[in-house]
Length: 62
Ligand code: SF4
Image 1 (cartoon, rainbow, N blue to C red):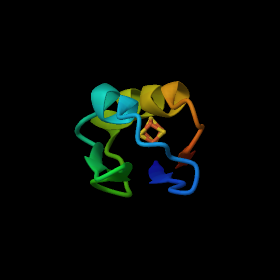
Image 2: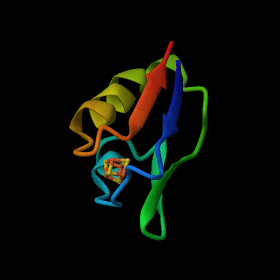
Image 3: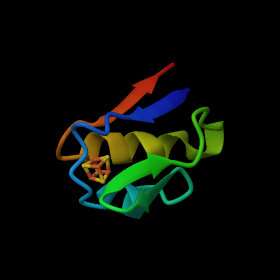
């Protein structure tokens, strides 16, 4: 599973970092991913972060 963030859509709310700090962290006024390939143990919380992103800025591909 791969994850990326649409930085044009991200508003820097920080929710993703709260849901899945292993994958997401804030970088100034935007979020960034710490990895592009998400290991199985983190996929559930990563998907939760994507579902909760108010901007639908988190893109997940299998
Ligand atoms: S939850 Fe979405 S809008 Fe908020 S910081 Fe993360 S990627 Fe950006």
